[in-house]
Length: 335
Image (tube, rainbow, N blue to C red; front, top):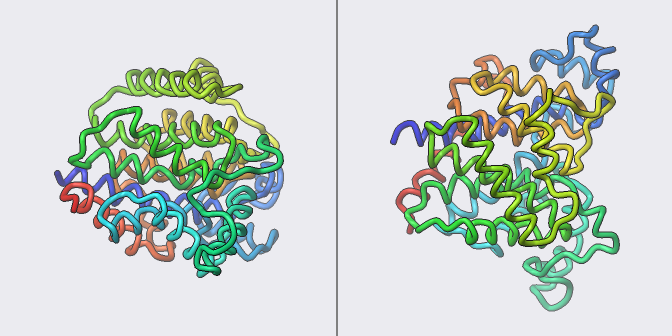
């Protein structure tokens, strides 16, 4: 039982650590990072502060949507003691309105529409639980859902409710469609959420079996929902070959970012620091990618795997640990 609690705490602490450290290299290229750090890349928060001086931005050194959105979902579950879609969406919206953290374009567009609905008490505007309908669905293929949906994997893994894969898929898809119309975003989110679920549900599972289950499950989803260029193809390529990614700057495109995060996870099964540094030094969508990876590695390795100096540098570290413990209690005890 204690191992499970540590996994929940580690997931939230790891997410926060990856997110904040990644904020320093967010939107930067690999060349920019190496030029400022003398070729060594980011090694700790001090290097991040140096980068922030050279490339100032309001979000550097602060949590972004990669932390606040999954935290809002977890807080919603803790408040209601169950998963309620509408409540999680309102919780995310209120968190963004209060903190004004960085989010992706699709999520920002949805929040703008929801503001009309919420501010009019539901009299006008689009209800948040309705599907997003962007003019160009191909532009709704980011990692906004994957960054926020992983707490569902934690919650359902320990919930006394009977787990059915198709039901869990529907939950993740339901979480994704209000902001991201393109099915690939939700399939990518399910990759992370299901991986988190398996880590908690089967802590002794081998990496080989974990990969096999993951790819088979995603292939099933892709066939079921008719997704083109499904994520499992990108995952299969990465699993079979050496790690490859855009050496210029890693994007937030779900077919690039999620497979990258998964590959780094499997390449660093026992080293939180190494995995996070690989991710933040890829630049681009660093804060979101490192947040997802930090959650996975934190769940697998526990909070003590996070370097002590990093923990001391994190704003809100204790709160993150408390949130993980609270979600565990709700998941185990239910209502």
